[in-house]
Image (tube, rainbow, N blue to C red; front, side):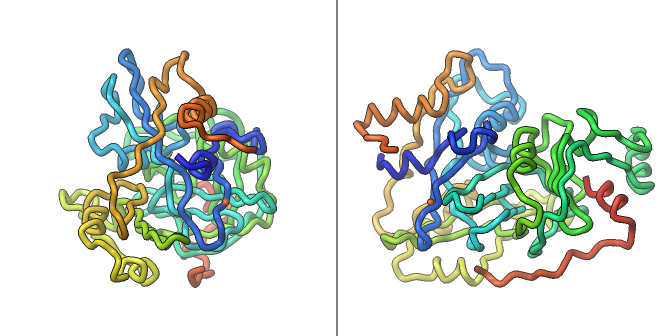
Length: 369
């Protein structure tokens, strides 16, 4: 295990103490986009925890864990079983600036100015038919602690159909569906928290971007007004690394219709011209590409040169027990075991705003919480 591999995965880095659970990666060189290492944990033999507890502990969305572990039980991961934590990823092929949101992988990337790092956070996005924007570049217009949520008439009707009654106004506080903090982007959408303990890594909102409480607080405290925000929807990412190695990372694409969502067949994959250029090289093993597209594991797969078994994940045993090591301790122990010294890393953009029905900003924000 190289020093780079160890250092590219930092959890709760000292430089970002406010992001208590954030995954912080040193930025690689400009011609490299592969970062991090996957981890492997063992579910405690006496565990009664749902998958969401492990997702929150390791700063994952549910979709990320389900792609990496397709047989996992969402309600009760099998005690004693192994689970992959997919912390290795390919950075989006975008400017390394501000916030980049890739709806397809349900991750938010934040590049703090002047730090040479990227912070990666899991998100919840818009339901089918109430989609989070794509191919849109905007900025943080304003920030608000303690946002108020005012459901629209349309939302009252939707909830009434389900036998639920909404308040006319939800005041600031822990019961507010927007959580405790909000970053308003453009005039119609927001990046905000939630009052639920489930739904990060799922399509659950009315179009806004949802984060866990610690994550939105970190962004609120650290992201300046005016910060660039770019939305993309790229289920397939690919990179050519400085040593010539080529990798592809495939996620399940977002369903585009109810029929597609309910179908037993996997949603079709679209390959962009930039990704196709990486895949079309003569050195690429097409069988590896086909397997990556079939499995859709959400983790980078090497597709050229000497194809070895996937690099072993950093082991982290019984991670959910009180006696378990912290991730920092696990990395330290692993480094000592391996005798590793730990000395102290653009496509064209459609800037047009998404289409929205004419309504007041307050109503639009409410309708997309």
